[in-house]
Amino acid sequence: MAYSDKVVDHFNNPRNMGSFKKDEEGVGTGMVGAPECGDVMKLQIKVQNDTIVDAKFKTFGCGSAIASSSLATEWLKGKTIEEAQKIKNTDIVQELNLPPVKIHCSVLAEDAIKAALTDYQQKADTQPIDTK
Amino acid sequence: MARSMCWHCQSEVTGEYFCERCVKVQPVSKETDYFTCLGVPRRLTLDPKKLEAKFYELSRTFHPDFYQTKSTAEQTISLSNAAVLNTAYRTLRDPIQRAEYLLALETGSVKDIRTSPPADLFEEILELQDTLEEYRTSDRGSDQGHQLRAALQAEQEGLERRKEEMESQLRQLFADWDKLQDTGEATSPARAERNRILKQMRDLLSHRTYINNIVNDLAATIA
Image 1 (cartoon, rainbow over the protein chains, first blue to last red):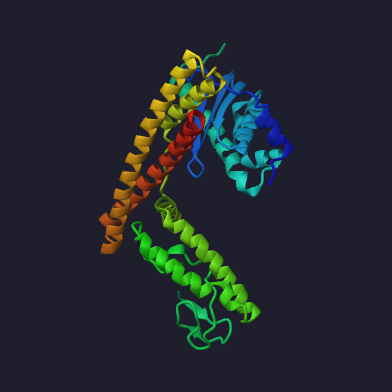
Image 2 (image 1 turned 120 degrees about the vertical axis):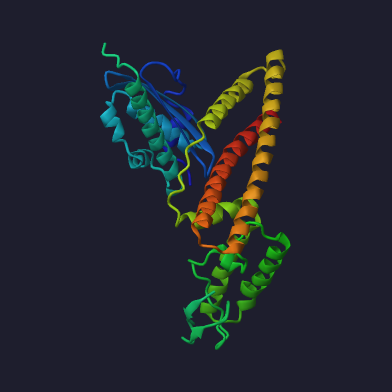
């Protein structure tokens, strides 16, 4: 089955590829992997005043995994923490038109979002929150 | 393979793959696991020769060529049995796939096998992928290109050693599993041992897959 145009677009022009320093203030890092296929995904968010101002990713895996995480970073930007929690893998499946065999890629992206949010909150809980 | 009723004569099926009464071939049920399908015990250390012999034997039994003069129903059954058999053999003949398959079967009942993602390994892989990318875009004839290549080669060798080490740990776990199955105990230490084996196996198999991927990438790039 061929990849959808949107997957190909994200694969050829990945948005927000790269990374932040893990210990930078307001940065949450999510690192997840899919043991079945060996794909590894790192997704980071930068939060200011409860809003995600920037997001970056690095993914080593198939086209769908790259597209899923690329799309996730696009969606995350500008969202509040609470809104970001609501992103579901099914939204990614729908947007990218992923075939059934690639649904686990979208699950991986959702897991990465959740992991990044958890990491951010854990860091925020142990550090004084920047209220500027 | 216990089946309730023969599709043809409606008598109870007592034979393994055929009805003993009307001698019609019986479909291998979709729920039948691959170990049962190939008539081997649910063990992780299987004799490849015996497995192969069993596969050939059953292949002859179900081969569609031998059903050309039979009814359409029998032809359909032989074809689907042959297909299941092929998948079963392909899965079980490879020790890693066999273990993955057994885990899937066993963890259906053990939901508490939760593994934490190996963050250190992920970091390592991501860093290596960065270096790989650097090498891909570098001038390979330059000093920098040579240095990168040497560094990547060293990484590849190190990872291959780790993979081998993991495989030897896996073989030990396979043996532990089989030993536990042979004792057939249902005591609580036996259950704890069972969960330990399954969890460690899950972790090792996953880590091995991640390492395998990066090793393949390395090999393909610096070959």
